[in-house]
Image (cartoon, rainbow over all chains, first blue to last red; front, side, top):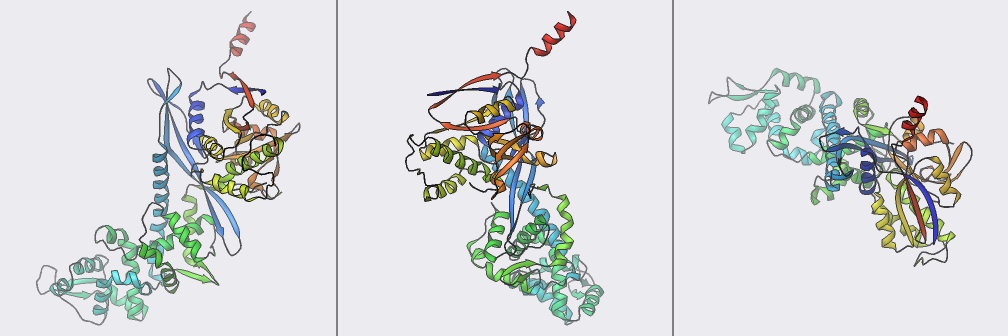
Amino acid sequence: MTTLHLRVQKLDRPDLVAYDRILRRYGAGCYLHDTEEREDHWRVPFGVYVPSKIVDEKTEKERVLTFNFGNIGEVLIRKLTMRVMKATPLRSLGKNIQSRRIEIGRLVERDLIKVIGNPKMHIGFSKLKYAFYGLQPITRTLFRLLREDYPTYDECAQIGEHYPDQISLLVDIGYAQYTPSINDPSARLTATNKLNDLYMREGSIEKTIDAVLGMVLSEFYYDLQRGMRIFQFIPYVKASTGYYGNAIQFGKLLSISEEHLKQIIREYYRGVPITRRVSYAYPTILSELVDAKILDYDGDYITGRQDIFEKLVDMRTDLPIHEEPVVLS
Amino acid sequence: MLGATGNDCVVASVQMICMYWRQEKPNLDWKDATLDFGDAYWSQFYSKGLRYVRSTGMPTNNIKRFLKTLGLPLNAELQFLEDGNSLRRLIDINVPPVVLYDRHYYFKQVQGLGHAVILVDYTKENFVSIDPAFAPKFTFRLAETDFLEAWKQKKNSVIIINPKTYRFVKTQVPSITLLPYLTVRERSQ
């Protein structure tokens, strides 16, 4: 038996006791906030740094970025015994981290929808077949209005239960209106000057529909999901958010394989279930996103659009990330 | 040597220490761990170790559990050392410590993620580390003053992995000593 002598710090400070617990149970990614003194105990809140590895497969460049999530858990230490009386369970800690990551994802998602919803970006929403199917009441109505076929409210309601609900979105953004008024039983849905102007500018029915769909999505993305339970365009938004979210963190457009993008999306929306059907349909979804000019191909790789990226990249400063130092020597 | 980024640095460091002890103490009961480090056992070691890593890092309790699962004749212990001299003592007796320090703080003086490296040597001004993040070079000299500051951010924590035949006698140093009190008394006298 070999005996070795060692001088160690006595665990007689609340921060040290808390850090001992943290390193033993959670890991070195955690850091302590200032200790708060309570009646019979100390409260030591802590945050966590979560590393995220981003790879550009074409150039084989890799960057490790770290998310900083403050106040993610706490350790309570009894004054009398200087022992831990309560600490955030590991499972809750994982859930807290996950919910913070989802919040960040939502932040990117919201901005991305606003950007691609802008008619100046000329996104071909009608190329997103599955989403197009979910928004048929809007597309069909626009088609009728632009061909000067003005339906009554009753006609719309007879087509389907949710038909008037989606049409009301067009009314809300000012591209359609009931004339003379919705309360009048003989009222007809007509195109507003705003819609006619847009049609003149875009030059074709398809492009006009694309522009209006973009505006509807950017205004009502979350209402469509929660209020009307229309989910068809979610996989497209998730795939785009996964790509641009990583590109924003990386600081420039990435070139990645389809399989890798699939992994990124899974990681980005971890905890949010993806149906098997959607999972199988990813190659189709990605090719439709390229057709719609939200993503692009770079040889065998998937990349993004520079103008979309440039509009999003400013939000990089708002994200709680920093890059791990690189030593060149 | 093993390269690692993100939270994998602890696994890489633990594996390198295990390899070190495997070579240093060949007479212990190493079960399937061969001396041929190119063997599949060692590549599987790393992938098995990654299963114990969480998004918050690798808890030291998991290191113990991991070594126990593999049946290696090693102990892993988390310690908060008193100062840099304790580190030097460990290096002197050929027990290379896995040090947890704030690498971001070391380079940029801004708080960041804890990072695990192995200290293998020291000079008057530097500690010599084997850093899995700096593959393929690995060896990195840490300027002592800056390193001790960055290490302090992580409360001077080290993971000591040693053969079970080693026994540590620990002297616990309290954070509040009588020294300031005695100094005041001496002055007043």
